[in-house]
Image (cartoon, rainbow, N blue to C red):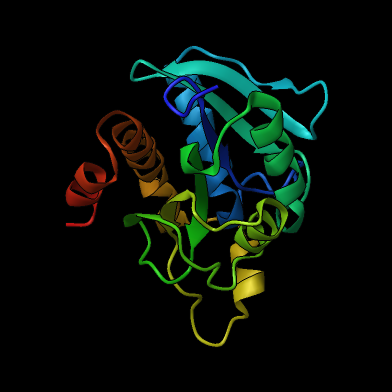
Length: 193
């Protein structure tokens, strides 16, 4: 399968289960849920890989939307399994994740780079042997005061954040669609302003 005919693999990072559903660390799951809803798709348990998947069309492109069924720090195994199963090269992988170093409600997109202390990205880099994949980084801001960042990301959204969360998730889904349809530079020009 050539790169042009391979689907995109769009992975939202998060932790499974109801205890984590409303936390900042699960914003990646919210974004892929939004993308699936727009495509009128449904997630189903993958038959071979520990992930929920929905095979859809986004902006005319074949895409596999995925939510690993493992904890965030073990996301690499499912992502590698999906890349292999669908024969997707890493340059057609988009990972959506929370980002502490970006202010709440801001988005940044990039190709490649380090993991910046993010355990989900570290796991993906380790399992795939590459960091050369697209990232849609959803800003959650830094924790207040001296709160431990690990605790902060696993806490529910604050009331003021919840008021803006739907718009943030919608913007992030728009950014993914623009990235697939028009490329990284156009998406960065729109969302980095």
